[in-house]
Image 1 (cartoon, rainbow, N blue to C red):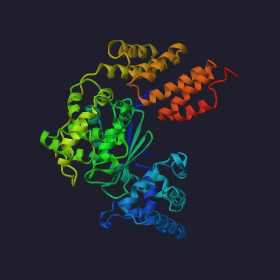
Image 2: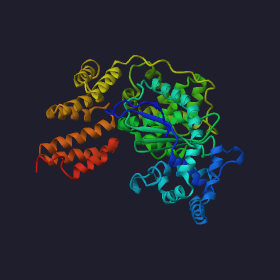
Image 3: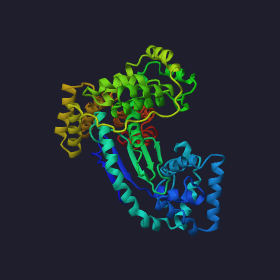
Image 4: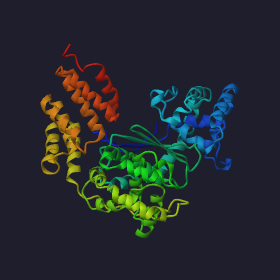
Length: 493
């Protein structure tokens, strides 16, 4: 399969960012089956040639299967429009294994809610894949996908590189998540669907003469920042009272009234987009007001704070710790009382600048460079050089840098220095800048250390803390549950 990697993943010490753009057999099969089942939102004259082709595949299956496909689609559609159906079937497609099995990737209760509503369609997919000869058709149309990907990939790469530069992140960063951008030519044109499931993010694009790169960048900002906000949410004092303000207001987007992390993350991303696009101040303020009136109560605060971030040497992950901590409920309540109802309820989204200008080159950041050096050295087996880089971060720049402490913990563990490893893993847990993936594995490693020391009670406590972190990088939750159920190693039998 042709896969174009936008950002090559660095070695796996920190599970670096991996962003790819590619086609996907699961999506192709799902869209072909949907078209056979009656899904349609375009005029035939607008179909991409691939979509014209897949609409003919129904002729290759028996009448009984076609009837069952149509009955399933119709019964699960209800009174909704065809447009409203696409997202849940895409959610299902990225939540099942590859063809020809199409089995759920996890237990039903752990699947996204919208995928669960159409889970029975996976059984029909397996049958349709075989009877419609999808693997053969896939080979016939694959060159169309290669051309589409070659056309869009440079633009997507440029957008992602510019975004990382603005966020002061090294290419690839230290994120524990993965993001796949899928081109699906059998989907309606000009559509973009974004789905996420734990640490996996998916963007599914239909064909377009003018790809919606801004929508993809918005998804990428979520990919980079969702965990940053979640980690620091407790630093926002009285955040529930912020949510209470917007819950009582009329004319706001319902999505911003139920979960404070949604309000905070979306406020931050909207402010970031305005800053990255260098929107002129007057028009930026109009956009800030529009977002504010829809319920994004922290957009004005973040927009102003990002001016300071732009001139700093810190990454967005490092800066957001203080940005979150400095939010003042009293100030935001006063802003709400003075401004909110004076802003008209928005009728449409504010226009983006016609010609976005690239952000400035990121300033030199010795911490970022040292962490990158330490990571690369560790994965190359040069433990001495890795240790020196991580120690220099702590001694010269930041005594409590989470990534450096976690790196030293792994080195101590590799050197079988159990006492030092325990100390560093404990420090990583307490660090405000350690990624959730680092904290969850620090708890797991500590549990294993105490299991090896035959201190079962203490070990179980750490495994249980890992479960509470809820991060599932490298199947951490399964490892933590296994630790609760059974001691690690056999030294204490």
